[in-house]
Length: 398
Image 1 (tube, rainbow, N blue to C red):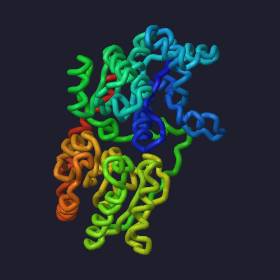
Image 2: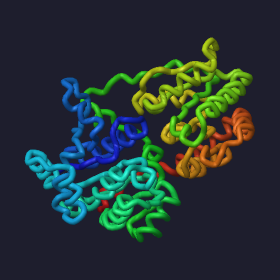
Image 3: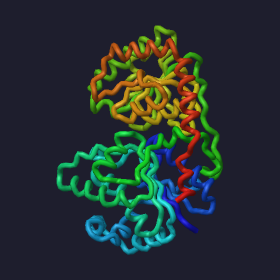
Image 4: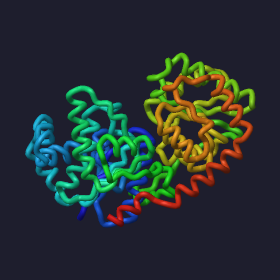
């Protein structure tokens, strides 16, 4: 049985989970006889559970990488030796690699100097390992850069990016800036622009993912409601007190417009800040914290019930746009701006790195309140155009 390795995904947040599930769904449809293996250190313990629910396997990075890196030689061999090679790991690694036909990387963002060096190194080396074992490697739509490496280790990572990413069959960049960086800095000729993986997807085949399809939790969201989806990442660029003050002013606006406001987390890291936002209105029944820990599938069906979102998690916006739900975006990277532009929503996008004018943000919420249906219609038309193509179709052409 041939293997397809899915790298860069997992279940640590709903964005990663969504991309992993979509990859499994699309790959099962095209390659029903292949064994799908999700490479995820964070989630491998799930395989040991008696009630393991998925139709794919999960494997540690260490079971795939050390032996392959060792055989690559040079710097990769030194890296493998430093990690420590055990005989049983080498044997397991060989069994995986000699039967692998495709590597499909679904990292949302892992290649750039904003990440730790090991993450970027591993992401680049997948392409080299695929070439070594005559497998095809495809980097699905994701963000790339910046590549501002200054330390000795950083320069080594940069060297490996330039050397190994050329070996990939296709590298898909979500944003123009990422595509341009790869082409100009590393002279890659295998890069193409493609919208986000989740945005392109029309449906997920649950029976391809689950051994037994679960009942999805669907909440009773009140009519005339707005969802707030914060992101702890914004606190890196804006003091927490200012972030909370911002949400307080926004919620005041929404309450005056007689909305019910729901605060919900798109990632485990955001549960704390959701609670802090709710605590700004401890006794107000029209400000509700959703404490359910959703799967990405459950988030998807519930987000469709809101009139609009005030959102800071990238894939919460993607899920909303898939259902033509408009968003006022409080982002922290170029990917938010390009996503909004793709869906005709640039005027509702703000970036904390640039410093947010709270009054302009509040005015944007007021504007959204007045034209929610118009925005929804624009998004619907844009998404229909995006979904005319499916990035997974390229696999059959390789």
